[in-house]
Each structure stands twice: as C-alpha cells, then as structure tokens.
Length: 213
Image (cartoon, rainbow, N blue to C red):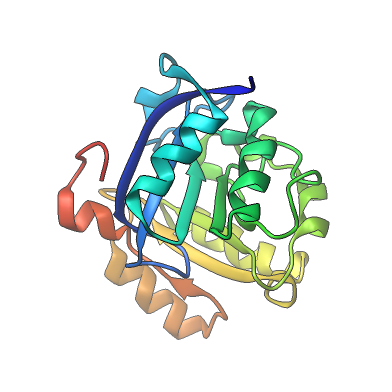
C-alpha cells in the first residue's frame, strides 16, 4: 500500500493564496531539499510518520470541508504526493499545492491549483528556481514572491516583466514577517501599480507561530 511521510494533518483557515480565509485541511509532508533563511516550518524537515494514502484520505474526509492544501516542507520531494493529489481530486476536493518552485511540476495533475514560489535573493536559494516550471502554470495557478527587503522587491518586480508573469497566472507578494514592513510593501505595490495581490499570512496574525494552525 502506498504511503507518505507526514508531519501533520490539520484543519484551519487558509492563511495565504486566493482562497485566504476559507476552512481548509492541510496535509504537511515531511522533508525539503531547500533551506530558505526565513523558513517557518523547519520542524517538517525530518521526522514525521509514514501513513498509507488510504488513511490520509480518511482523515481528510473526517473534517468535512471541500478545500485541501498539500504543503511541506517540499511535498514534491516525495513522489507519492502526485498520487495523493490525484486521488483527492477524484473524490471531488479542491486541491492546492504549495511548492518551492525548485522541483519539476510537469507531472502534477493539471486540476491541482499550484501555488509556486519564485525564490527571492534574501531567501538564500535564488539559484534553485526552476524556470522551466513556468510553462506548466495557467490562470488558476499562483506564483508567490516572499519579500524580505528592497533588493527582493526590485528583483521580483523585474521578474514580472522578464517572464511576463501576469499574463501566465496570478501573482502574490508576501512580506517576510519581522523583516519587511508590510505597510511599506503595500505602498510600493500601489505606487508602482503592480498587477499583484498583496497578502499577509493570516494564520500568523491569528495564532502567531502555533503549529497545526
């Protein structure tokens, strides 16, 4: 029976993306090949518990909500993640995938809503961006820029034009909590009239850094 190593499965409000605020089941897979300096889920780098996909589906069903987010760590580091998402979709769930953008997304079920990072300079993982992934994004998908300083903002703004990102998919600009003043970032977006969605991590405002929220 196919299994995945899972750090946690929990029910909360979606804190990011274009479904922010909606009750959602989160499946956090264990493991990540990246080490972003601002990472807030280092506890998911190792450990976890191997759970059969059938049991994961049963846990999700118990929460009785149509929205499921598969996250990490980096969920695509476990090949069985692809099967999990397809099985969730076949059961009628709206499934989103939070991925770093460093691993190939070409085999992800096209019904999945992909929320993919493009790593900014201050992440420390700029060289891990896999730009070939851009061709597999469409209008339902989202690219997230996590912005920690002025250099990140300038780099992100240039990337919008270089890769014609607003024509491909939805764009999210998110401040690094404690590093980038959110008001300052919002004012820059307005001044430059950028075609992006500004977001703050709702779950951190509500529950600080509590796990399982």
